[in-house]
Image (cartoon, rainbow, N blue to C red):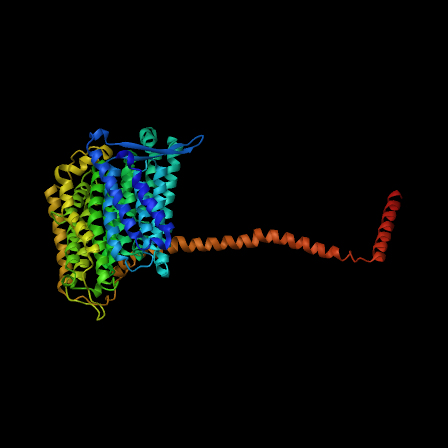
Length: 626
């Protein structure tokens, strides 16, 4: 089965092309082809996982050669796949959660006339993400990296007849291209230093490179990761990405795209292990983003944008763990996996709410939906408990490990990172409880034309399966350090390190802050009446609602200066370059017009001019002789 892993990319990619080329003839069955292609990737991926699991830990790495890709004088590179515990973990997450999202989409997009195209884009997304995580070189990874960027652009702007949706797609595309510059520069540094872009060749030589070079590579890789995973300062696109259909939001936020940055950092652990500076910056970016995302989530009334802020914050936890080095790599991926289940479940739950509320997204117009949408309420509630980190749900086993790891170290770092992770847990409890209570509890705030109802089984079954994962997956993977042991061939063995605070103290503080966040949210949004119109915001609330004015900053720092620079260059081009060319042409033209006056076509005039010229010549010669 390991040699057949190329099917993981080929099957969804072929399905995508087939659906696009088949045209309207495939409208009646195209969506089922998309579901079947995604399900096939899970079957193949699960088979590869079982075969890998049967090998000894030191043998759990299998290379699959595809073809000779680049054969240049200096760069020799084959296209190949790397099947190891890290890549297979992502394969299982992407294919399983992706298949459930595909199934959900069959009903969610039932009345969309372009449903077939939607599934073609979904399969393109899955194929690109699987190529990204299976690639055996940075250059092939970059192909998948750009593929998910293209697919996200197509899906976010799927309803591009609405100008704001098209703008959101453009924004996501442009911001991610900024991050891509980091990956391109990193690859340039690698090739100049190691003469290769293959993982095996690069990682084998990292010990020979200078610390400055490795730090530069690490920081440029981080730039790429911040763009793709919506981390500070390239996080502004994530909230606007909610313009796409809700299944797209679930796929982007749970199983694909935003997880790519975390994958890139952990996959490059051999580089980050040797540069403390780059690791520190990764951890700092993660800590800052987890707090920014949580604060933004507290101020959002749009259910999907609140969940988007939550994703930003939770990816911040993963980046923080990855920045802690060997002590945190496995926990970053652990939380990524559990997050994939409970966040996908909550996004699909949000889609279910929208389905029953005529596409309403304002939580101030919800309330008491638990009575009309019981399955959605229960499944969403399990995801809510998981993200809060309430034992024994999934987030308790993964996020709490990151919080404990953040308190490991010496000097100021464990206190700063540990406190950031703790505060983030309390803020998460508040804003996610606010979302849950405003939507499902309190008094009904529906309008007369809304009649909330439960979603069809094609939508509820995926939500139920994801809720089961939200409830029990964390315990299953944490038992006996099962997940950390599984990743050891890639992330290395993690020795136990004592945090600066004891584990019971950290756990007590975490659960206390979580309880406080839930209680405060209940008092304010569960028990008390919630106004249907948002009250006038304070400066702090206004700042959070506007994503800390990130768009304004981008416009002021990049867009407007860029616009003025462009206009200046256009003026200079018109006035100087074009002016010189046009001026020369004008001068030649005027000279021609002046000379043209002597070309009258009258023979007598020509004879007179010849006579005058001859007389002048004779006079010149005579005077010269004298």
